Length: 250
Image 1 (cartoon, rainbow, N blue to C red):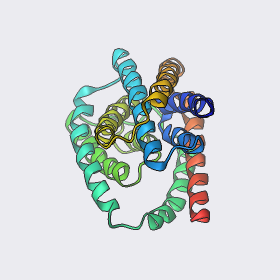
Image 2 (tube, one colour):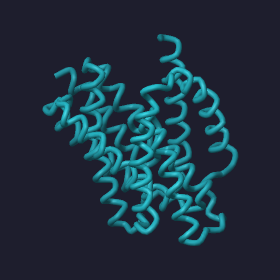
Image 3 (cartoon, one colour):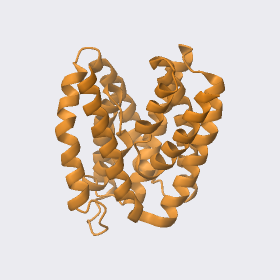
């Protein structure tokens, strides 16, 4: 029972945050580890609940007309390709060196969010062709990151889409959900085949994750950009603390 008491509230919170600004895995995965699950079981079980929660958020955004499928769907293919490549790279690149790089990237990203007004609506939108090309490239690059390391993928993708592709925050959030759902399903299939998902806990946690994602998606569509910026700062801060802790304890 203690596993459920630890995991379920944190998975709900992770789903709420993930629907708004990405990065829910920074909360949900440690919850499974704190509850005592072995690392592979924690990752697989977390992926199960995250996948179902992301499905609900994606459905909500699609129903609200936020997802621009013309831009989002092509990026799914490049994200999956990038994710596969990132996983291959992870086999021979030292992850500790990558964490050191992130100690520089995360404060710079936080500075950008705080002072550069990334979600201003006055950016001139690109043509459909240019937007699709940029989104394809970003999908591939973020896919590599997701396959190689992963935490904060949704947060980084939202920031990149608004900053580089000049799409609105709504479209960035919708595109991010579609790409995340594709990569989550792909990874979940692998974990299911290898039998590392703890189904009793996964199913109950998934209910809380779905509730968190649903409430978060509704909050996003009703409140707009005002709440996104502080949530992203919180996610980046948690990520930074997590990396520092891992480097100090290994």
